[in-house]
Length: 89
Image (cartoon, rainbow, N blue to C red; front, top):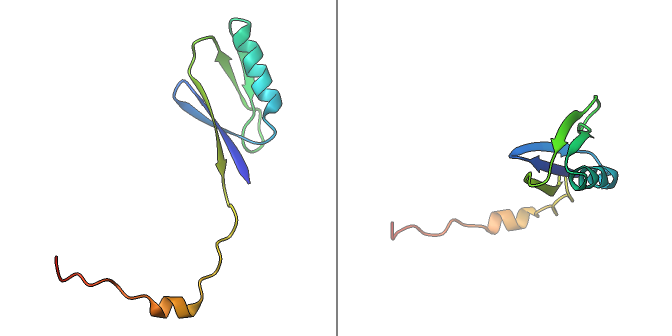
């Protein structure tokens, strides 16, 4: 599952997909000289209105949550592992 993080003026907002329409709304507000855009919450609810304006620091990030499961390690490998010697310490 991928979650998008929108950082606006140092505050983080986590967004559900799809984000293309939201990105377009934010860009349109900034190009118009400023405007409010409703940012939806990650889970249900009314969202939050944020005033976007030119020069405001905005960063988009994508986070992969609950990615692919790691391959199981066989018990033979666990038994073969030995801590390295620490005689020099």
